[in-house]
Length: 113
Image (cartoon, rainbow, N blue to C red):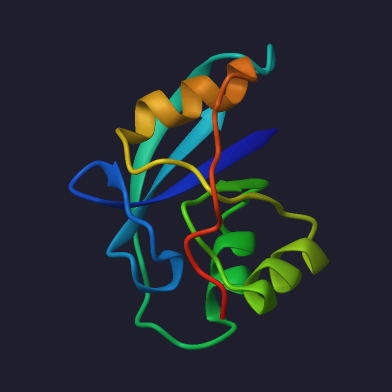
């Protein structure tokens, strides 16, 4: 099962992954093209290295973010979680729909630490 998370503030992607208020989480149907369930996951207090374990335990398979540091990307990759960076600050529903359709346009990674 595919589960995508988008770091958000007020329903829109927030560009700094590690300091977001929470995540919109999307369970993807077996067809790989439609959302079967959406829920909000509050972020734990910021602590380096915590989010890969936290989100991995929630069954997350994919992250679509605006920016993420290289160490965090490596930690997610080690857990088998696919990371897409450079997504625009837009409505999380639109971002996931575009990602699933293969039409998401990404720019520069908004975080390089």
